Image (cartoon, rainbow, N blue to C red; front, side, top):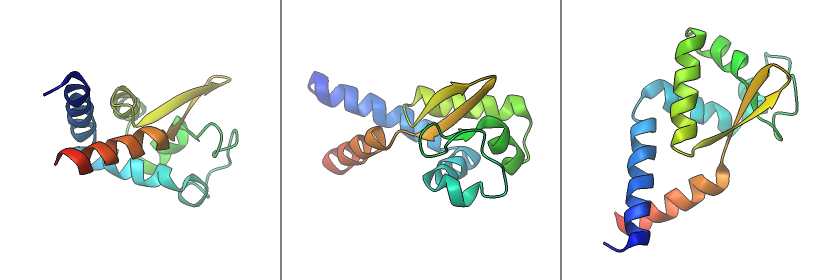
Length: 110
């Protein structure tokens, strides 16, 4: 396997690991359409630009803040989401470019 293919394989494995958890997978689905999925929560900042506040993800999931923070860190390490600080709050949005590249790599290699 060439260096490029090895990197892609490693990236795919990290993404698969992150998405293997049903709650993290659900969060990724919610972040696909943040305005609709988080309509019950007053946005702190533009969801399309900076993403969804972690407190809103926590409220929607019903999980402890520490659990949600851990889940979001796993998704970020896998390159599936990006974080942005707005004041004291961290916001998350999907990294659509990265998701497309991963989908392409999966299509090419599997």
